[in-house]
Length: 590
Image 1 (spheres, rainbow, N blue to C red):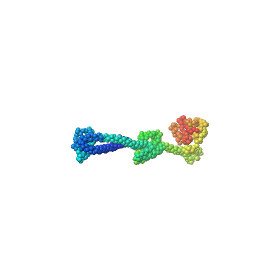
Image 2: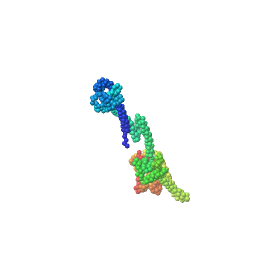
Image 3: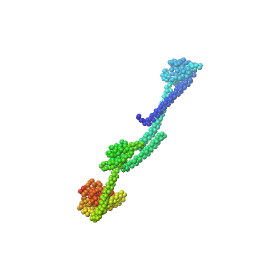
Image 4: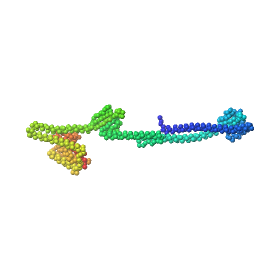
């Protein structure tokens, strides 16, 4: 159905009603005025006839019909009225405009018959004599109290009609003016109503678009003002609720975005409803692009898709653990539960993904550490116990064997003491690293390197290994001198252990890319590439038998790594079998 503006639904009916009322009123008024004029004309003509009655009787009695005709001829033009005198038998004896001899018998004229019978006769009809409509009024002419004839006076009806049409024109002009004024007023009223409604419509559209900054003005009409006030209150309530929803959504998004756990929400068709940044990073997608897509279009991991399907089908919360990426062994711990609406109906599922890769690796490191510590401590303890039992069983009787056994016990005790000392050292370094309690100061790097070289000089001399130190006196760094000395000493000690007699170990320090890099280079047997990533782990050994024979505890490189972390630096190694090794340690430059 075609809709029309409100103004065209109000203004035309108003105009039609006003026009119809004016037409009805005009018709009634003109009819009433016409009747009034006709009655006035009849009364006027009757009065004229009554006045002429006595004069006609007098002329008829004294002078006969010719005198009556002469009277009509004289008086008619004076009073602008046609005068006709008719005998009782209908013969015309006098007329102000025609010759009576040429006129027909008037006995059958209705006004004549009515005047003779009733004392007054009136009629409006076309006059064949004059060729126009005339109004006739007749009164009886008495002779000794009996009607002897009729005195008839008449006027053209056109006079009345001309007056009526003039009145019609004035009424029509006044009615047209009234219609125009009424139309203008109704147009103004309609426009005021439609403008108020248009303003409300524009305000409602602003409200629908979320713009509640401006309220609707209150119209003068009480009903329209009540409607506008109700809409303003509705807009205020909507604004409050939308603000509350936005605040709640922002808080929820802030919580979700700050979570390290990935949060994924899907509907019953496994279409992604929402996911936070952590979940998007785990899946390797962009959150905005993934939202609204099916899960299998975004996720390629079969275990995760199966878990989501189980969460949708399960009544109780479920939990599982799986590998997300095989190449880097990323382990996820997943918790899933059904997502319900306000009526408690299941509309999807929420899955929380927690990356436990580091935790599982730490657990593995802990297990390896416990196993390695147990293994490292069991070897010297078992050796000490075995030789002590041998001595107790009678070996003390042989001085040479007893001395050799005691020397082995002493050596294993030293090794056990070295392991425990390195463990305590490593523990102190880690504790200081967590609490940031190890002081650093700007000092010359060469002092610590020289002290470390001096500490290892006796071992190098015993093995005929030369140590070369290359470091400028002005090279400064923010360091803990004793710790840096210990780290470099561990690197130099390892280099001496794995260097061939007659070779050289080079200690070199210089500034590179805004940091001080310390290199300890040897020309020993080198390290296979598969061992390099785990070389700085605790108790990790490339050649376990050789390492123990050389007196290593398996903790030296781990201590170096933690000392570098205390200095906000890093360690790494470059090596190849048969070409020696170069260990690097960096600390921030001063």
